Length: 202
Image 1 (cartoon, rainbow, N blue to C red):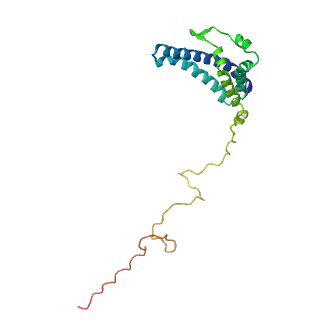
Image 2 (tube, helix red, strand yellow):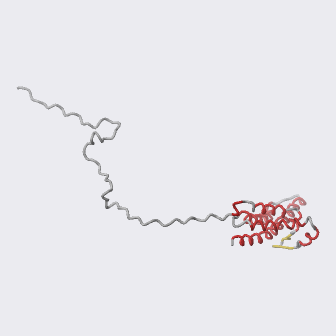
Image 3 (cartoon, helix red, strand yellow):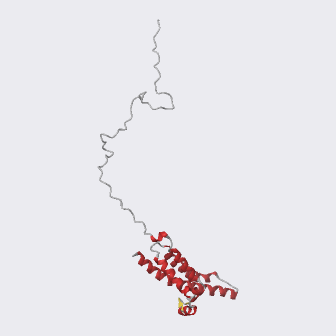
């Protein structure tokens, strides 16, 4: 199923990117040419061509980078490479077969420009090379379902103490000399009692 979805994505992405690139290149070329003719420029005029070119790059980038299946970028790359490769055989027939005179959103769409300036060859080569990644041919690792934990007996709470549970009762008297832990202070031995006072003879 993932290969079919990838093929459909590649079949849609290739012509859509061709149209968007043609829109962006034509508008960008006309804008820059007008700047040099009038010796004035306004950067806002390039916003619309940049949107067309950026959208075309995003469409092809999603097909080339998403790990669904490598068949999608392979098909999209071949659809862009074949028209340019056909120029080596019969360039006049290929150029006449590409439609001209389209308009989209009021802007002319010159589909022959990306074909003639080699943009299709460049983009098609990138998409075909994206299929040579070994990781694209592998499925995503499936999560491992751990078995549910066994029903252990409930642990004794704070209110009830188990018979085998050690107690934490502190000794109330002086510690035994044999079990007394070492300290850095003076020994715990109490001082000897003072001598008893014996009254002398009157």
